[in-house]
Structure formats: C-alpha cells, structure tokens
Length: 461
Image 1 (tube, rainbow, N blue to C red):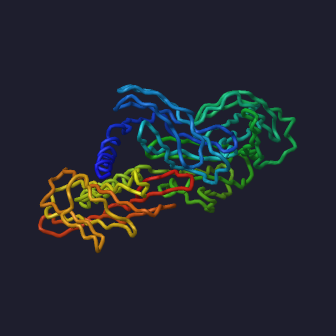
Image 2 (cartoon, rainbow, N blue to C red):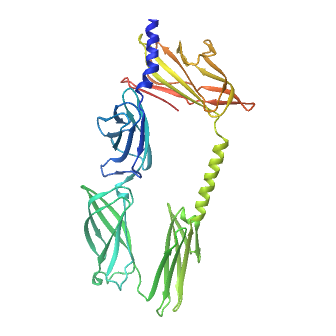
Image 3 (cartoon, rainbow, N blue to C red):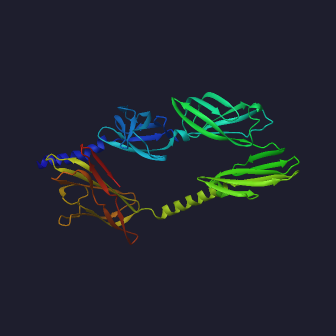
C-alpha cells in the first residue's frame, strides 16, 4: 500500500509537466464589440502557436457565454493556426461598456486561461446621425449616418425622415465608418416652417432587427447674416466662427459649441461664453449676442492637446519611478490541486513557488496546515527544516537565494472527511534579510472548489 501511494505521488508530480498545454496566443483583432439586440456573437481573431506536443484544443468559459468553435481544434507540435473565437451570451446581459472575461483552452491533461476585453453596447446606441444646416439659398443638404463601433453591417436598410425630406437607402456600413448622402430639397415643402432645430430620424433594419437613431437639423433664420466656420490644427485645434450682419436690422445671434468633459479642460474661448451647461459627459457653451448692422461677431475656440500629452508622460514617468523603487524582492505563488487517493480520502497537493527577484539571505518560509487536514510525509522539492504537527506548521530554511533563483516546494494533505464547496488555505509567509534589513513577503490565498456534480475548480487570489 505504501509503495502504491509513492508511485501515485510520483505520477502526479510528473504527469502535469508532460501534458501541460504550452500555447502562444496572439489576438489579431481589436476593439471587439458585443451588440445587445442584434443577436450576434462577439468575435476574436486568434493566432495560436503550439509550443508543445500535438494536442486537441477545446475552448470554453464559466461565465454564461456560449463558446465557438464547438468541439476540439487539432493542432500539431510547432504548428500555428488561425482560430476565430466567438462568445455569445446565454440569457440577459446586465453589463454595458468595457467588459473583461476569462475563457479557457483545455488540452490533454491540462488547460490554459486567457482573458479578452470587449465593449458591450445596445443596438440603439450604435449609430449617430446628423445633417448640415439648411441654407434657404441651397437646393440640397448633406446628411450622414455614422457607425460608432468596430462591427461591419451588411445590407442595411435605412429610412431617413424629417420635416424637410424623406429618403430610403440600402447600403453596407463598415466598422467606425461614416456614410454621407446628398439630399435634394424643395423649398415648397418647408416654406411655412419657422426657424429652429428639427428632428432627423433614421429607422435602421439589419438582419430583421430594427432600431431608431435621432439627430437634429438646424433651420436658421434668413436675415442677411453671413456665417463662416473654420476648423484647423491637430495638436492645437482652433475653431473660428464668424457671423457678419450685412443687413439693416439688429440680429439676435445664438452660437453653440459642444465639448466633452476631457477636451473642455484644455479649451480656451475668446470671447468667454455667456452660458455653460453640463449634461452628462457633454458641456454646451452658448454665446448670445446682438449684432448691429456692419458688425461681425468672431468667436475663437482653441483646444490645446499638448497639455494632456505632457500630463500622460508625467504620470507614466511617476509610475515607472514608483515601480522601480517598490519592486518586490521575493515573489511567492501558492496553488492547490486535487489528488486522487486510492483509499478514497480527500487529498490535495499544495505547491509553493519562491522566485527571488533580488539577492536575499536567511530565508525562512512558514506555511500552516488547515484544520482537519493531515500531512502526508512525502515532499516535493526541498524537505521542510521543521514540522510542528502540534501547531500545524511547516518551515523551510534557506541560507540565501540568488537574484532570479526559483525554488519549488510541495506537500500533500488529506482528510477522511470530504469537502463540498470552497476549501481555502492560508497564505504562505516568508521572512528574510535584504541588505541587512529584515523584510517579509506573503503569497496569494489558494483555494479549491468542489461543486455538487463533482466538478472541481482550482485557483488562488
């Protein structure tokens, strides 16, 4: 019996290293998006290189997303394959915005965890529509529809409608692309309308799914006021709006400029706006002026993007500086895994990896056994310097660890009482000397989860 247990332990120590998944995964796509209401999965283009033995790969996750491809993907030793990973939610999705989730790739005897980040957005928020201001002296107007996400829409049916025109179009719209249309106008259709802002509506249909986007069309007064707008500069962007009253009456002029909460911090105005209104992430600046005949109102808006660039560089420099001087001397990683005991006992293998990032001396590693668990007197790596069964402590001692040196410690605990639910181990603690000063390091907290159907999940935090 003792000989069989020894062989079992040796097999458990050797098998994971033989059958471990060794993959290099490169994500080729970017800015992926999951559109709620379109019933289409979020798609990731992966380039997978097998750095180990030939294997059959299975993709899955534990977060309520249906995963494609189904089945397994065969990949030879040293082979590189392009795989399209698709994730489709099962049921309702409450989150919106950027979302990071974990998926897993399972091979023979082991698996590899990966993370992907994508944006979750409602179908109704995908499109933006707008139009130029209507010039009573012009016979046409430009309208547009913009795709705000990285998703290609094929064979879209769009019906534009407003108080000035109706237009139906069928076209495709690529990710983050904008489509502009020139619409002919007939002044007889709107000569009874007063000046102001009118709603422009776009009813969009894609693959039988429908949504509506709204914008505005400005119908300005016609009182011999000539307006011009200039926009130039990249790093220092300048907008100049001029309104010249070439008529013979005083004209009440209202000018609106919209900025987001970031750009407004680096924007200056000349003259200063009369009204500033905040609405969510948007800030609207309004100038209300009376323009006398022969006068010209000039509004200059400058946004200097050099300041945020300098701030970002300064923050990066601080982060690098702090990271350099707070670098960990000793890193401890702890993990537990299930062990199949022949006698039917509940057994776990505890693995501790010590990685010295700098030269340290007189290293004392202390680990505690959880209640109700017994220690199996076989160890992987270095044998403990002290075993205190009464106080349930294990201690390892090392005279020194060189920079970059790694030590692996392991032992097995067992219990005749089975565990259902979450089984957590306390963190491992190390005390050592560095340049004559006493320091310490603490590992993560490892845990083991046993579910009712017998599924086991290992991990740490």
